[in-house]
Amino acid sequence: MSSHTITEDDPQMKITTELNHEQQEKDFELQNEQHEQRPPKRCISLSSTMTGRLVAVGLMIVAGCCVALQAGFNATLNAHGGRSFASLISFAVGLAACLSFFAFDVTVLKTPRPTSRLKEAPWYAWAGGVLGSYYVIINVLCVPKLGAATVLSVFVCSQVITACVIDHFGLVGVAKRKYTIWRILGSLGLVGCVAVITIF
Image (cartoon, rainbow, N blue to C red; front, side, top):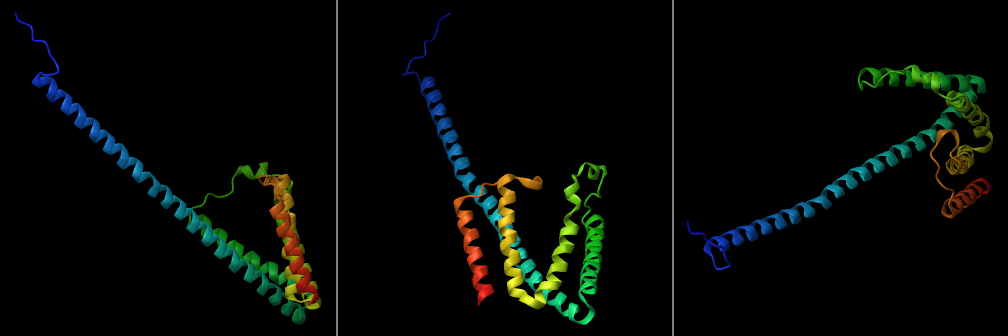
């Protein structure tokens, strides 16, 4: 039996080499295509995240406008019905709105109802309503004397500074976020804005 030795000049060797070379080129092109397709996916994700953040900011702007209107509404109700009545009605209407949202949330949006995990909640988790009622009562008392702009300016200033301190120390279950020099400068600028609004 005669043996056939494959050399570089052998036709079979040339065909095999060409096939391997073509396969390598295809693999290289496929890798390049996959690499080029990755950035658009990240851009889409980034765009979606940015859109969500813009929507959230827009909703917060509307909420801020509502707080300013609430101060005026409560002051008007205070003038007609008294401060305690104004505070009571404010929370009664708010309770009705919250109950409606809760019913919509668990029935239409299918959000799970509160479970036994509520027993694990710390005591301060239940104090939000007390602090909210304090804000409404003080709002009713102070807006007629100081005006809505001054009251809300002081409120926002103290709120932002307190929130930065809470972030810095990670209080009441909030993730830590350092009170940087830029945040400090922003807080000081906010204090200056409140001073201008209050004085002038």
